[in-house]
Image 1 (cartoon, rainbow, N blue to C red):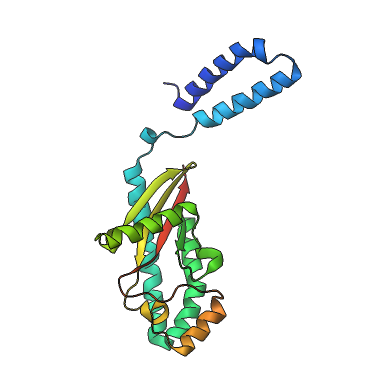
Image 2 (cartoon, rainbow, N blue to C red):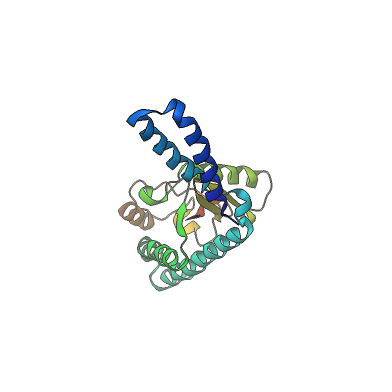
Length: 215
């Protein structure tokens, strides 16, 4: 059986060639015909919803998001026990990107943390899709859905996009809560100029773990 994208290309080619004798004569017409054939090929070869195992991809993304959290969280807990929250801020600023990069290399999924109130403006600011999902997460939590169960995924622009909500746990309040010590505020200002990720209460959504991969 011919691949769907090849069938689509052949159909598009037949249609365009039949019309070219009347509307695309001369060099300019031929150049336009080539462009339309290329566009048709790219469009035809995009995976359809029926060709994507969304459940399997969602499960993969969920597992890798869990790996990210289960790797970063003990690292921060150990830093807190060893030298307190100021040291943990330094560790988080250095280790979190390294953990995300290592998981991306291992899995093929790009892994990031994003928030409507980002701590690191340059790396944690959401794109349009992520912003929309985070806003819906807030709405769903206010409507009574447990924050720990909030997930979203979508096929967008040739990628599988996935996000799960990141909640504010008791340990997070030291650096993300409403009563932050002066030394912690100073450390945050040093490592994260423009930090917006404070003022949370326990259980609130403070962002999301966002994953994406090309299809």
